[in-house]
Length: 58
Image (cartoon, rainbow, N blue to C red):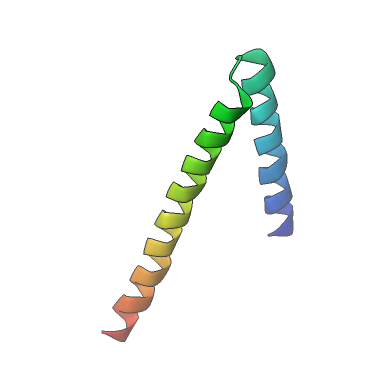
């Protein structure tokens, strides 16, 4: 699990570098997109976790 976290972090840094220096996106655009994606992933994870948890009790 720790290895997956480090690989995901490295991939995020590499994608951010390419988006900023090669594709010309500003840091604010990259930051906003990253925050939006993080919120969506967190929401889907919460829905999945609590959905399974609520279904077990019924």
